[in-house]
Every structure is written in C-alpha cells, then in structure tokens.
Image (tube, rainbow, N blue to C red):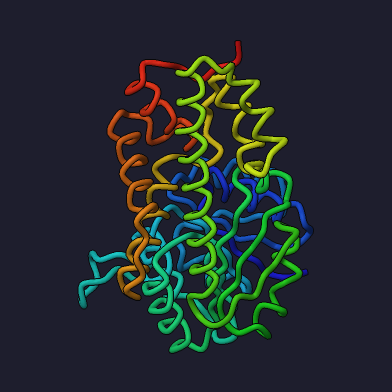
Length: 307
C-alpha cells in the first residue's frame, strides 16, 4: 500500500483523486474547498489535510491539479503571509521529504514549473511536470493522456499511480517539456475550434443547415476528432463545462508567452486568444469553450443550432 497525496479538487482534480481514493492506497487530500475533500474522504481510504504541507508530510507520491500558475506556485511553495521571513510555511515544499515524487498535473508556465522543480530538488525531492488532457470525461473515466517532463526513471517509479488516472503517457523530455507539449496541443485545439466556429456561422448565414454542414465536414478532409466531439454540443446549445473558456484562454496565453520567449510568431493563435477573451468579456468564461461560437453568432445575427 503506497502513501499518495492529491491536491486540487476541481472539475478535473476531483475525479482524478477519486480514482486514487478507490485504488486501495492511502490518500492524503487537500483542497481550497474543504467540503469537497471531506466529501471524497468518505468514499475511500483518504485523510483530509489542513494544508499542502500536511499532505507532503504524509505522502511519498504527490499529485496536484490546479487552475493556473499562481495557484500551482502557492500549493508547491506556499503563499506570502505570516512568517518572520515574509512567507507562510504551508506549501508542499515545507513538509516534503527527500525521495518524494511530486507531479504537477496542472497546465502552467513552463518557466515557473522549472523554478518549482529546482526548489524541490534542493530538498531532495523529485519533480515532474505532468499536464493531462481529456477534459472532464477523461478524468471521470480514467482515460486521461499525460505529457511528462522530467527524469524518465522518476516517471517510471510513479507510473503505476498515473495509470490509475489515465491511459496514455508520453515522456517529452527534461523539465518543462511536458508543459510545452500540452500548450502546443491546446494551441492547436483552440485554433481548430475557432476555424470550425467561423465556418459554421458562415454556412448557417448562407442557408446551409448546420447538421448537413457537419455531415459534410465529417466526410471530408476537414474532418476533426475535436469537432466531431464538440459540434453536437453546439448544435444542441449545450455549453455545460467540460473545459471552460477561461482556462483555455489561460493556456493559449501561456503558449503565446512561451512563443515570445523563443521569438516564434503565432499570428493565428493571437487572434484566437482575442476571441476567447471576447467570450469571457461577454460573461461566458465559466462555460465550455465551445460557447465561444456565440460571439461570432452575435456579430452575424445567426445561431448555429440543430433544426
């Protein structure tokens, strides 16, 4: 029986942690929303912790999945506050033991992730950037795909516990490389959907029934697995969140930051980022990212829906 830890019980994190709780291993839990941790602890062999530090004191393999770079840094390093040196000693790093493996499953800045990894290394702990894809359905079904950055041998040690949560695993290279792969994947995803949205609004405005247009796309070189999955939600006007607009916007922004650091031009992605920002400005940031089509629909005075 291994001693595991999991932090962050959001749309993705809760079902990921739930699989670990039902795996037969000991599990230490922490979340900003304590009620979620207490709820999950009732289901399996899990202990609710008061802070990330307490999780680190109890676990040998630690996973966390939070919303953005600032949250990840806070969970790992702790936040500024009450300590004599200006910091609160409540982060994972304040309780981590030598030899512990820490895996950040969030999508954050590769640069900051490498800084976090170096801080853990100074404590004798091993760190993996291990963002995942598959959205809420993949988390619930334990079919996530993980992109791993860091020492491959360290990943192989932790792999049995990753396999409780996912199905596909790609070791992408050294620190930060898993995140670089994830940002690339979400960049392509966002641009694909933007192209779909523009095309469907154009077709609907031109009198082509959306269901027919989708069938044509599915039987042509324009076929896309993403579109085949997302289009039925658009046509049904179902924007319940699997992957929110605000988090995709965050990821696209991180991709643009990474590109700026490396002097890589991303002109299409820059426009897609603005369209996602416009969706957030309309108040739809917490809706699924497929809700971004509504911005174009408003501009064109047409709605893409199943007839």
